[in-house]
View 1 (cartoon, rainbow, N blue to C red):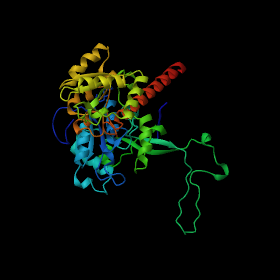
View 2 (cartoon, helix red, strand yellow; view 1 turned 30 degrees about the vertical axis):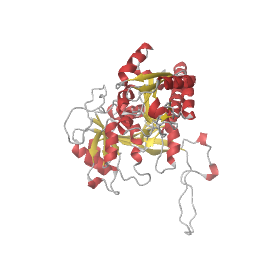
View 3 (tube, helix red, strand yellow; view 1 turned 120 degrees about the vertical axis):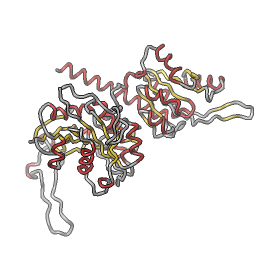
View 4 (cartoon, rainbow, N blue to C red; view 1 turned 90 degrees about the vertical axis):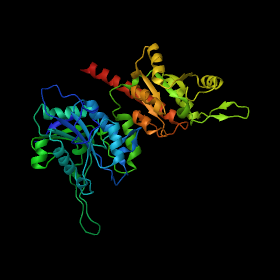
Length: 438
């Protein structure tokens, strides 16, 4: 089991009319007609890490991880980000969220989450159940949200929140020079238990809080009424408060994060732009007029990684910025990849190649770096851009490299693809074991 449950007792701003946005999901098929809204609070004034909520984590803005889980869960009638910051709003909209532009009254350092949620509910009277999702929970998966919400919709609870089990022995804090002695708070030193003999304690993970509207409005509570908790396994619980947490969180996300509903192990074909991805985008001219490019050996290593994983790699040049035929042939021979020249609409040219190989775009990885690549970045099962790509391309990509073009971006994306393939293979093997043992 991935978790335990126990009982303890559209591109629109708020208030605007319009059609459903991409973030709107399907209602639960239970006959329940309550409007369920996901709400991620993302104020711009983070003290520990400036603009933490949109800082790139494992190739995706931090807030993008929870938005992806919320949208793909198909639980919510609307998915919102509450913010007071223009850049956070822009990123949230690109992820398919609607925007609650919070007022100055609930954007202060002293403002609480409850203050903001109450304002959101006043502006959106159609909402019956709100799920407050913490932006700093990048290992959140759709199944966490589905199983927790079922406690409300199917078992009649008023509020459900996420907890994680910790095995920490706690001691009383004492002030320096107070003369006081510390004392144990949750253990007997004369009978100190082994970890395997102790169930540990449940601590709020802060990952999410489901609450009925009436509980918030009438009692000012996120946890109350008939309340239950939903236990999340420790590997899915990540705390990000200061910069030192970031690399640890990144490794955790790469292993346990939710990368979308398209399984990455099906990737069979990769397209990669030479200019701006495999190179810095520069062409050197010799005295004799011969064209030359510089390709980083780290990126050629990335190509070899994919080839060893059975992925066919095709390199792309553009008719808008063509290579000399001789140069393309040299690159092809050097890297062992076919080089293809595409037109102003690369998707039109590549569609035929995908069909010839009897693949779908979910089987394809694409690395681009320009606005003309946006369509391909959107449709590919896995897609990436270098860190110096334009904003429009970044918004379309599923992974944003930390390295710029020609300086290791290809290697970074190749390692990401390999990691996801292995992760998916491991999950498939575990599923087979579960089926065999059941």
